[in-house]
Image (cartoon, rainbow, N blue to C red; front, side, top):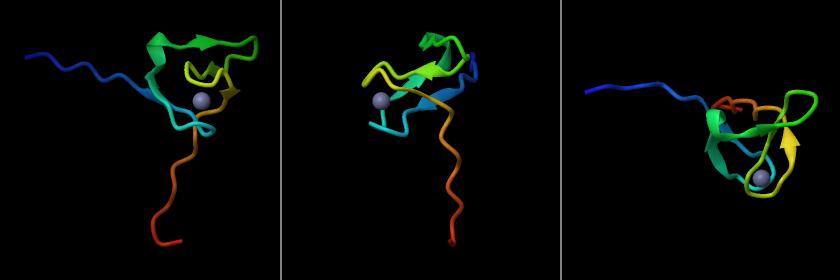
Amino acid sequence: MGFVWVSQFECASCGAREATTRLEYDDLGYAVCPGCGRNGKPAPKQVAGQ
Ligand SMILES: [Zn+2]
């Protein structure tokens, strides 16, 4: 069994998830959401307890 870790992009706008290898990127290198077309930085992790 093989397991390949693929980092995922999660859109901060619509919540769509996609493997980063399947995304398109804009001129600044930001991933473009396949769902809503919005580009953005990877969503920061939410810290529990805040
Ligand atoms: Zn989106």
